[in-house]
Amino acid sequence: MKILYTNFHPRNGGGHVTYIMNLMRGLSESHEITLATPGSSRLYRYAAEISGVKRVDMFFPGRVTELSAPCKVLRRLIKEQGFDVIHVNGSSDHKLVMLATMGLSSKPRVILTKHNDHKINSVGNWIRSILATHATIGVSQFVSDILLRSPYRRHPVKTVRHGIDTAYFAPASESDYASFRAQHLTPEAEHQIVLGSSGGTDDDKGWLDLAGALALLSPAMRKRFHVIVIGDPPSVDQIARLEIIGVEKHFSFPGLVDDVRPWLAACDLGFVLSYREALSFACRELMSQGLPVIVTRVGGLPENLTDREEGWIVPVRDSSAIAEILSGLASDSTLLKTMGQRARIKALEDFNLNRFVTETLAVYNT
Image 1 (cartoon, helix red, strand yellow):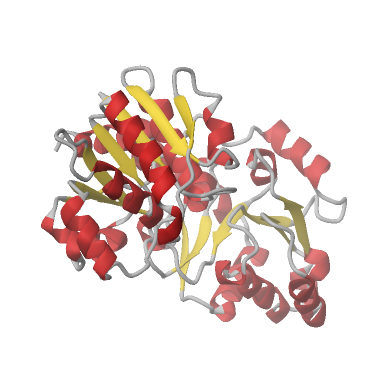
Image 2 (cartoon, rainbow, N blue to C red):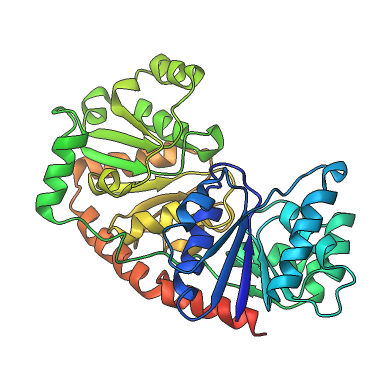
């Protein structure tokens, strides 16, 4: 099968990068894979690591006045390569694929993955659902339900949750755990309970609600905790908010890192406290590394775990609920190891790449 993956993000790309990279790794040995994405993107750079994948520097404009030139380039590529499937991952690339395939005597199947919870009942989505969609994938049941309430319900809708490399995201050994903590944390934090997240520092990621939870603890209990937040450095305003409530010394910000594993390996539990979330790669990577996770009851996040089994599910924006969990862990942290083991088992059973790739390939063949 000849497959074209498209992605419009010109720079970081977030979870789209992990999603497409995992599919290309899983399918590149048995299928012909081409990637069309901006040359400036992280995805374009990462794809060079996969043998056999052809990369095309492709711009997916948002403005109608800029569509003509890239549309001609994409149409030529589709005609020359004769793709069986084009897998699109957003409205910009979906729109360009629609225009580029109009009037072709032999059209490839177009599969759309919806990665977010944005509304999709616009006229544009209605047109794309008719002219350039054969099936859709929701990355969680929550997202699939959105698709089923949209124009895309005219086609098959399949829930295929994110797969991750559970061998790559594996629990650290006791010696590595100690080494990573000594390397990445201050001496004061070495013996604390460390919470970590690679979800980023945007306000809507909810990490400031964790800061609020720490502020609710007594000073003595607060000293038991340290927090690592991987992503863009926090803003001046965000740092000021930490200082106002007196918890700035309890946070570390390593910035954007290509390999989050050493930082997560230094943690005892993870957190994804987003205000909106389709499913969350970050949550699944934490669990795969054997960490229980605190998540908010929003979007597809609760689909990752069972409350009080592999972690905790709390109401969104609820610092008090988070503080209650931290208070219990400060008194007895032995539960973390058991819950972490359950999280790892859950990841091996439900998050593995083979299942993810197999279920996606089934959609291509629907």
